[in-house]
Amino acid sequence: MSTKLFVGNLPFSLSEANLEEIFSQTGKVVSVSIPVDRDTGRKRGFAFVEMENQSEAEQAVKELNGTNVDGRQIVVNPSRPREQGGAPRKRNSW
Image 1 (cartoon, helix red, strand yellow):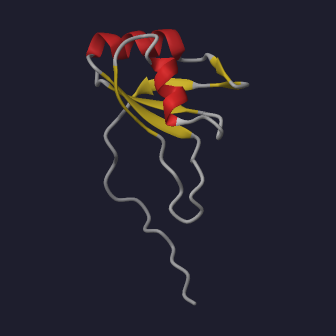
Image 2 (tube, one colour):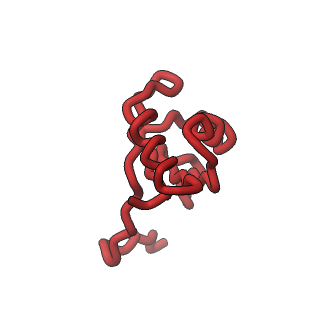
Image 3 (cartoon, rainbow, N blue to C red):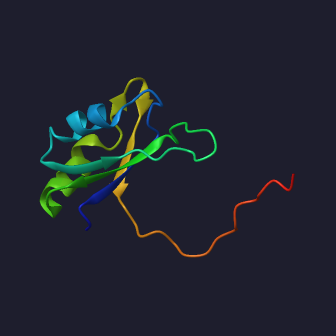
């Protein structure tokens, strides 16, 4: 299992510092990243949290998956490598 976790269904108001605080209850957090939409600059509702080691990552999944954060039930899973390919982004032609 990777030490990097995917965290989904996040409230848009949640900051990286808030997310780090939540995950630090299960172990040492190495990094937190909440992606934003490049066109609008708005948070996309998910994040990646990297824990210091595998046992802490497993503990975070066990304790935090399905918990309620600001009225939303979050999803915590091991992160999978990004798949190559996919449809290219549509660009405006004007």
